[in-house]
Image 1 (cartoon, rainbow, N blue to C red):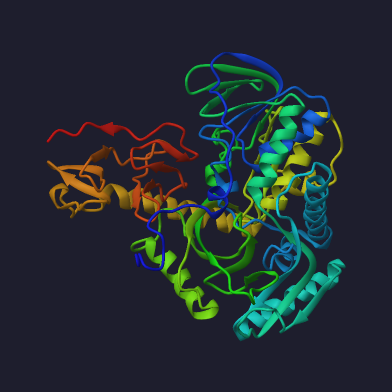
Image 2 (cartoon, one colour; image 1 turned 120 degrees about the horizontal axis):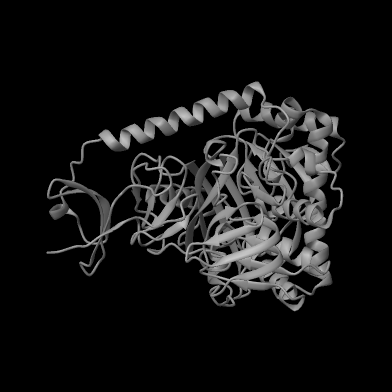
Length: 511
């Protein structure tokens, strides 16, 4: 990595600019009306909504509050989720595609209104959203998306080559009156109000399993009994209920942030080609404007080469197009994508009517998290929600495209499983450099090893505790990543991302 341009340490711009409250670990058996597993934006929003309606709510988080995906997003508050509407019309029809637009537009409006009513200073800004093309093939996608907008009656949309970007594009689709904000300022503001309403938050309290429909067993043995259980843990921790690990894949993407020039772009942007380029700005605590660039996505654990190169590619893009000389932050995020691109929100599986799930936002979690929270809250309160059928995890019929996606995904998982068990290990432990990690040969055994800059060695059994795939070392984030279903671990083996809930097996190092 080029130290002069990019920081050595991965740190989210959002997490660096806010202080977080701390909460106790759950230390006893408890009973409540609703238990929410996962304290990201979905869980916090649902807790706020339910507590405002008089429900007794407990929220448990396996790590630290807001240490997951919410703190690593680009935080665009928009219903323009890439060129999705032409796809939704083809897959679900115009009525459902229009519902998706209305659901996410309603979520955007709710977030803006709630921030204002509760006095949450989250830097919410109204901006135009731009979907743009650099190639002729991209122009065709843009025009088809505009046709979809017109079929659905989406207002405030125009085709334009004037984007405010410092470089020319071949075409863009502008959608007016969208938004951007600071996701953690908003989430902590909602959390504060939820606590005032009586919600209890517990962190470093990891759920293990659900027994019957009303009992959550924690990793440490404590139990939570509740009338309703909301699984908002990003990847469902109880993924065997509904086999969600066969219906989604995890994708990592990257972001960098730098001080913006005075003539910074005023909207939020994403292109339609690959590689993805996501662009926005944010107002920092120092009063200065920062430029945020994102992209370079790939399936978790399946990038060929050093993953730090993804940051370097983004940095080069910023240097070329925005004249950026130095970056203040770099970080990566993990997102879950469903077979048909629509999130799974609602009853987790038939036979578990009191267990609800929200997952699979496909990088558009700001508005979709609010949609999900409302669907789940209405279910708990016995209210009808007109978006519930669209987001229903138990889709009424698996379409031909879904079957193809499922077969392709599971074939790739099988390939990774076999690859990990048969691949020859060429790196010897004695050759591992300071500050590096890898799968190494140690006394004839395959071991996951990390050696920090002081020479301290950390050894793990490099086998994911979810379903036994071999993990790979992610040098960009100093983590062990599973290429099968996206579980991630720290270099010491502790769980960062599910579906795994058990840490990697540690191996004692003896010199």
